[in-house]
Image (cartoon, rainbow, N blue to C red):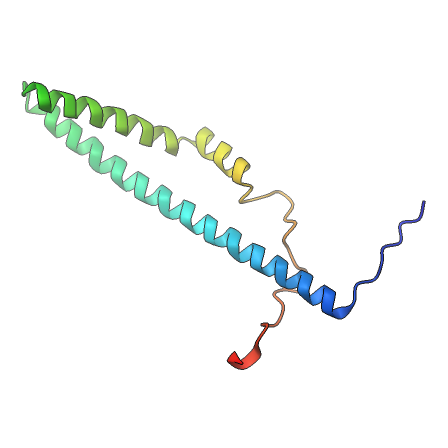
Length: 119
């Protein structure tokens, strides 16, 4: 069986490269959003940990405040679970944000813009 592939025209090749560039941009946007979510979650986790510790040192509180503390601890637990390396790894694998072999790579770099000089 022959391993000959049809030759793409320059127009088809450029269109393919632009699709790759768009997919890379989309993936980078998703990567940045995840990174921002991690940063926000880490910050909120630190704040919530401090707040819960502060509430607990105050001692006996009303039933409503005890329920609030219980709920805050459950929320904190969920946030800490999200930040675990094993959970983060599963998320990264599922979303395929950092593949071992990048099928979106373009050895020629990004193609020229579709409309040069803003036209």
